[in-house]
Image (cartoon, rainbow, N blue to C red):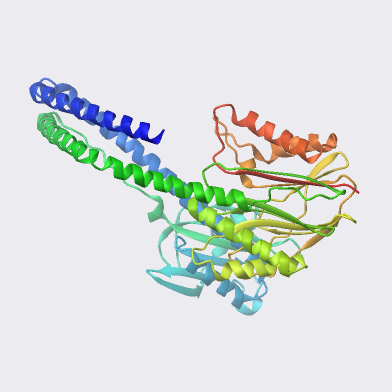
Amino acid sequence: MKKLQHIISRRHMRFNIAVLSAILAVFLITTLLQAVFTWKSINDELENRKKMEVNVQNERIDALKQSVASIVENSAPAFEQELENPKQITQLLTNMMRQNPELLGSAVAFVPDYHSEQGRLYAPYVYRENDIIRTKVLKYDYTQFEWYSIAIENDKRDWCQPYADQDGTYALMTTYSVPLHNTDGKVVAVLTGDLPMSELSYVTNTIYHTSSMRSIIILGMQIFGILLIIVIVWGAVVNMRKIDSVNKQNEFINDELSIASNLQTDILPREYPQHPNLRMRAMLKQAAQVSGDFYDFSLQGDKLNFCIGDVATQGIGAALAMIITRSVYRTCIKSHDDLKSIMNKMNDSLVSINEQHMYATFFAGQLDLQTGHLTYCNAGHLPPYLLGQGEARQMDICANVPLGITEWDFETQEMQLKAADTLFLYTDGIVEAMNVKEESFGEKRLALHLKKAGEHAMKPDAVMKQVNNALQHHLGIDQEAKDDLTMLVISWQS
């Protein structure tokens, strides 16, 4: 098949060379006759390029804002643990700035008199000045600014309108604010991430032709077109000699991706544990040749260890990070019985080797199949659903940070399952699956279908089929999910 494609490619190249040569001959004869039409096509092309540039820049801006928002949101739980420790707050801000070069600055602005020993208003601020990270305390009344009020008054995470910084960077910027809550659930501070407006602006160049200049521009473009076609024809001849080399390189890359994909598939559990009190099913559908999602489970006597995770990167990097995270998990459950120790050891191991600042959201559990006692820990992952007693609800989870970000003392939780209770674990690709109308599947749709499964006391394979069919119906026949789809369903039978 690849040889056939190679032959077709060579024939296609020869055909293109012949066509381009014919076009060159015709072009030389009809240059003047085409002048009137050429200037219009030039203007159309410039307009199209301008639109493409705007679209590309808008996508870059959206990606940058999403990145900054994700950094601030994922870091918020760490700051909430240290609200009473101003020195540790400053250290966390410094670490966050060092690890995230896209941030211009970051502050934790406390409500008035929260740290009265520091003064009525206290807001440690860490910002970037060229390549130097500096630390200071804001001197102005930040309570009058939108970035503070939207978080404090509305308990809301959002971007504020652009403003000029009055202390520190003195730059025009916009700020993403996340409210920080104390142990009583009260908003007592705001964690911010600053993004300079210079990163969110762009310039497009539009050429306006006057009547006196049109003929000169048209003639210049015609001459340029002739030279361009000559270069293209010559380049096509030269490139024919490189086709075989390029094809071999592509084959090598595809082989490497295939190896990575097979390696990922091979390390996932192939058989379900056999126990009279256990029913379970799992699914991982890759959106690309390699995946960042994973799940795992193993049975040790009457104790089931299980997990699900999502690595926050793509491509070969996602495959390697996924394999490393799953391998570290397998090593830790063999050497530690306590889930808290497993999570802390995993995180310490991943932080120590995480030079690329990758991280993974992760949920792990230990289920006693004799008693139905469940111990679990959530590291920044989506809350699983508990199906039972004719209903479906999201489980209560603690705000632990994802694995690999920073040193952390993970908090575990416990609950007692009832007979036929079912756990539904999943990754964000499920709820973010987008159809042709740019509508995501969403938590509401997922909860609705899981509720139906709970009402009918479905077994794990039926629950997975219910959700999978709903996803396929939402996506449509010709639409594929852009992210990995991963589910793990576990049912305890007393």
